[in-house]
Amino acid sequence: MAFCPSCGKVLPPNGVCECGYTAAAPAPQNNGQAGAPGAAGSAGSGAFGEAVNVFVGAFKNPATNSQGVFTGKISPTAGFILGGLYCLGLWLTLTLMLLGLGMKFLPCMLFGLLGAVVFIIIRFISSILIYALSKNNAVNVPKIFAAQCVDTVIPGCVLLLGALFGFITVYFAVFFFIIYFSIILYQQVDILKKLAGNINANKMFIKFSLFVLWLAFIGTICYRRTEL
Image: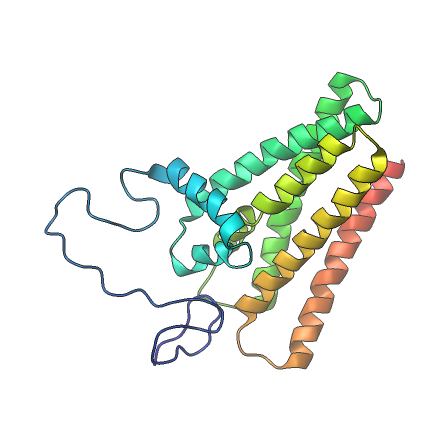
């Protein structure tokens, strides 16, 4: 009996799980010949090339793209590269937003960098929480964090649009921020749901509640810091 490495459910005979995972067919022998097709991140593309492909894939399959980290289709290294790009993008985005509010350039850069680092730390802590709540031995915290880094592509673009439109009016920035946090919440809860496996609805509700309460607590702290 085979189990899905993504959600932990029993795989049906056709090898296609409800979560979207498909069992890979045995790889053909290439007798050591170079240039044969390989797994994600194989020679010829490299981690950066794979990261570019994952970036494009985020727009083609926004709801299932990050699951490739758990099924082995996406290497954690590619996810970490996207996480680094996300951090740089956040730095630029927050700097632009603060400039739109009339702050001086140097303070905008410093606060933008601080905000980008804080956002990345929050994602890493949420990865630990997802791992603790899911209790899925088939994954670990680095893989969950890599999957979250893959999920940064679309919300990162949304936040950048908010920064650009924020120069027109601050209401645009608020509008895109709401969209950004809504996507983040959906993505993280979706990862938790897929890694939780077969549990009853009441336990899942409790897990969701704990996770959302933690996010609300972090959001309250961040808001309070901006008020000081």
